[in-house]
Image (cartoon, rainbow, N blue to C red; front, side, top):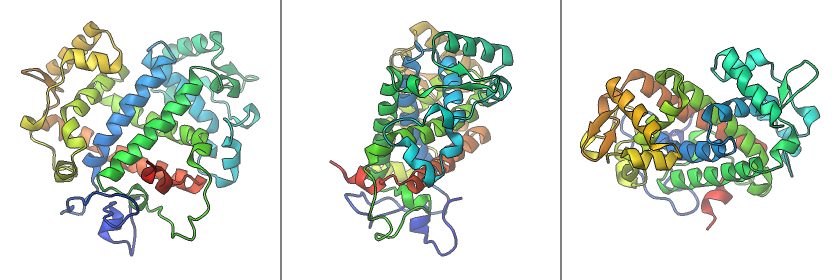
Length: 347
């Protein structure tokens, strides 16, 4: 999925000392593997920011957020990679007649929730006017819902967070377009719409990305969305300094190069609960549960996700998926006309 025949190792894995704009010179990748840890660390910060912002629209209920996002994404997923339909996203979300309803059964499966749990959340969303049943064919999130607050704000938050993600990777010397095999020649990329004009298309594509990542990772935590979010928040806070340090980011870039535990900054219960907007006691109970399950370790100053857990095969697979699915999303956005270079070089 990354690179291909005739592509240099530098281009295949996004090492881009010659890219346009200010680029840090990265550390070399010695084994030829993708820098999934480097990318995943930056992505986790993006996921946390975006998930917390999206949950606010549902009074902090992460399950309600997942159900809503699953409906919203299913309605427009078929349009994500079709440049001919990109115009449907200019100026707003596509009209309701372009949305494909999702059945309750398919929704339960896509959201990884028991049918009865899913039914309760759907009923609440319908009563709130946030989704609608369509002639026995299934559910849609109407365009007018996405146009009102707080959902309109979540679209802007998605765009802003994605720009931050791209700039973070660019600042580390990672060329996302090259890694995705999507960088065009200058002549081909000369005419582009303003990136902001595609914020609705970006929101659709990245909602799908976030859904895939959340549902892929939550299984490790017994399908408990809150525990999974606490887990990745602790993980991200542990290595926050490494995430944005060009030298250490590339030193610990690949699957097998996990940072040693003494380099992990402990995350306190209060810091995690404040970051996620969760009650202190809820956060504490989940962290103690993770310690008892061997998924976290309590140290002076808080909690860490230790090296052996980071090297667990399930976590490694999840990290690789985070990387590969991001490359896929970047390829989709490039085909829709999103101007990555304009974003990463903007002041």
